Image: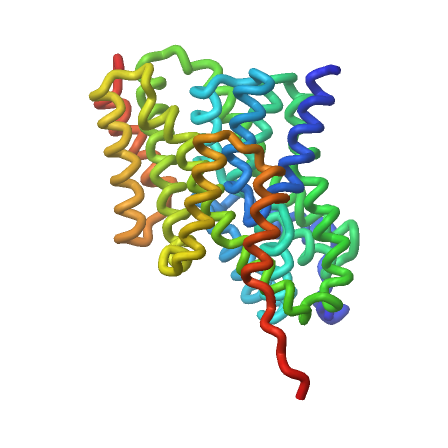
Length: 183
Length: 186
């Protein structure tokens, strides 16, 4: 089976499993692309994810870079189509029949029941990128301490102040350049 | 209802409006950008229509911003409108990512760049952590919700239980525990 077909399979499935937004599939995406298919390393995955946060538009468009890494421009296009088309078809279709189940009491139950699962999946996503970027056993202890400090500082600043996260990412890059060289 | 004939945009206009948002929305929060442009600036939807679109977009799988774009595009100009809106919101970011990806490929072995990227990656972890805690704040008060947050996290992060397994085994239990209360017939 060629890589393009595998990319198509993996990202179509992720598209349909992305309940509660893209971040919920981050751990599964990392598992599939790093451990199962060896398309990218842990390090590349964490970097590609952070590049996605720097670019405008939907942050999960970073999947395009995984496809590109695997199979060039064809891989990029296959991944974009696979990741966005299935869920888009579903939404398009359901928007027609929405009125029929909008009042159904089970709809609120599904949303209510799924909410904590989505949060658990997002926390697992923090763990998935954090174990490479912030508590990586192949890095030195000072490196990990500085990286954890950057991450916690960014979270704390965002709680305290409404500020564009891209500025904080750039700041993180500056701090990293200054303190993390040779780590 | 779709807007009045006089205010009905063409496909290129739809693509242009969404592409502008797709190119300018640095730092996330796309849904807020979409609301400002569609409801306030262009008056292509009213508030209620936008909220209904958001409700569908959040309930179904996929990214909220892309889902809302699909519904808004369909509302404006049918299937082609949906295609124009979704590609408009997605493509500018992909182009930016291709540029970032090319730079990354060229400079990743440079120690200065590697150190800066490590800092950016750490900051991205902090951003995701903050978003998760902010959305989750509502869930961290009730014991049952905390149980499901913790159980999902532990299964996925430490036992590598696959996402389909989590969704098909745990989700039904969580949903049934939140089942609608039977209303006595009036």
